[in-house]
Length: 323
Ligand SMILES: [Zn+2]
Image 1 (cartoon, rainbow, N blue to C red):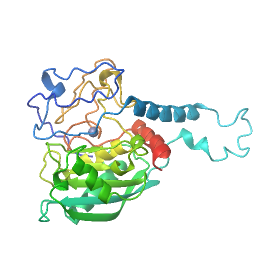
Image 2 (cartoon, rainbow, N blue to C red; image 1 turned 90 degrees about the vertical axis):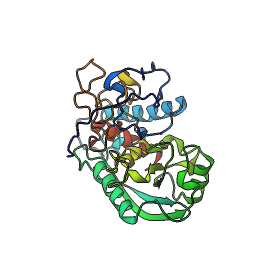
Image 3 (spheres, rainbow, N blue to C red; image 1 turned 90 degrees about the horizontal axis):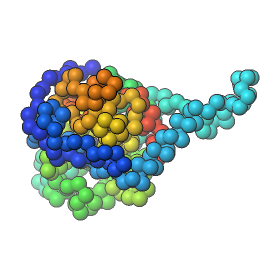
Image 4 (tube, protein in one colour; image 1 turned 180 degrees about the vertical axis):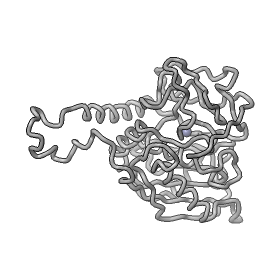
């Protein structure tokens, strides 16, 4: 388990507007105090775009369907315990697949500038992959999820335009169109000098069908382990963005209404920065905010876990949309 830095927060920031669920009241983003405390105003943690209502509906339906299946008795009448089992098919919906049983092929695209500079080395790539796998295996203290990631290729490209491609830009589309490999079950990571102070962004599994070439995860090259983007340089940007790629929301999605739709992550009103131990922005249940969760905005040294609920949700969406 990681050590917890207790870093205090500086300025308020209103740049984050993740009002993804429009039916829920918008959270107040301009409150004083640590609710919007930004431990490092040089970086914007994540630029993953808002989901459309349609996507949210699709995701919620998939999750609810699996939950409903889990509540069904295995066999009507029951009693003899063993009469042919479930037939194997949808009966598997009641539990998360075993830890480490689902491996996604991963292609890691390193984008250097025209001169071949300012980009991750193979050692950086390997270190990022190790962090990613350890996080999803529960090796830092969270739930051991079904997911692992197998690096099948690292590509290197010298292109100064792609090297700083912004989110939603023509350069991003050109880059991904040229480089993306595999299908919905292939994780494509793009690492470069993301502009605008962003650490990264990702696409959700529900977006694959409508725009498969854009599917994947973008991370700031300096966010890899040992990179220069302190306090976001332990590789957890990659972990966070892959969480989105598997369908997870931010823990502060929907604010105090618990809009991340995961029952075992405490609701929080707004992103947490630094590592504000004891922060509790939704004082209903007395549960502190999930500042240690990979899907919050805290420093890399602070976040170390996915929950069982997040594992279930990601597994459900993965079965439906990836593998
Ligand atoms: Zn995010």
